[in-house]
Amino acid sequence: MKRFQLLLTLVVAIAVATSPAMSQSSGVYVGTSVANFLKIGMGAKAVGIGESAITQSEDAASLYWNPGAITHVGRPSAVFSSVQWFVETNVTYLAVTVPFSIGTFGIDVSYFGSGDIEETTLLRQDGTGRVVSASDMSVGLAYARDFTDRLSVGMKAKYIREELAAVNADAFAFDVGSVFTTSFLNDLKIGIALTNFGGTMQFAGRELLVSNTIPESPTNKQIPAVLETSEWALPMTFRFGIATDIVRSDQTSWMASYTISDSRDFGARHNVGSALMFNNIAGQVSVALRGGYRFGYDEETFSAGFGVGYELESVGRISVDYAYTDFGKLQGIHQFTFGILL
Image (cartoon, rainbow, N blue to C red):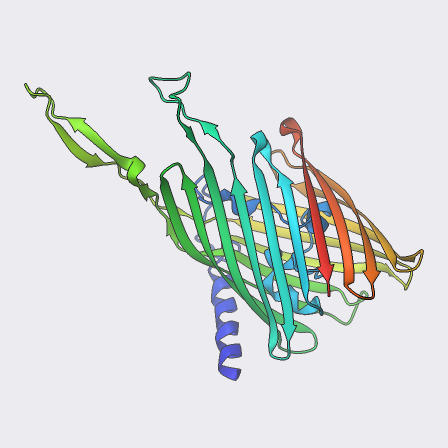
């Protein structure tokens, strides 16, 4: 176990040192990342506060933002999120975390589906009569452990795949992160996370098989050929965040959070958010009100949301959460999350 802890610490240190936020030689390469569905925030609780809390660990959705935070969930947890994305596409997310004596294990799955798309070409812009679809998927396995009573570190390995009609690309990547709990400002938490640290993706498949006519051939001879595609990097992102309770009591808590993120394909972005929680309403009911704002984004601005939780003695804690995100000219996005703590 000591060897594993040393290895995990080295992985975190190397990953952070090579991230865009820490490398002086790194640049911003706008529009050059593949698998951009990985940028869609998951979990209505985190999205409702403007995606500003990488230290929060209310349920298994924290696995999406920071694998080092899942040790603080404390109980077996499962969440399911659904997002109606743009142009009638849909994103779903499922995450499960389970604590053991040796640490906390987790698994999560993200899936983006386009639905049916009518194929068009340059020569047949009214449609070819063929229907195709696009889909993206990420499957992750995570492990996190408390190194001390204040420091937790986690890592997630994930498989990523994109498909469009009969072409596809895949890659493996890692997320690493940690959370440190201080002894001041109501136990202010500091978190770091590096996500989508991995290889490149290159599309291949039978849709890239073509036939070319030999120029000036009297017989119009056709020769088979394969279209060459380029390799594209994953949207690696480094985040640093803090969060604390401004007010804390058995009945009411008021949390504020801030996160700065730096990615290989955009400049530094800032996220702020806050959540007001009312506990023990009418027995075991709790209600949360959330809000947040994003700075440095093209269209995304504010988020708002709410949640209701209920503690059932025979089942556990059940919660339903909602978040709305404004995308300016692109209107807004709605996300619903159902969660359970056993």
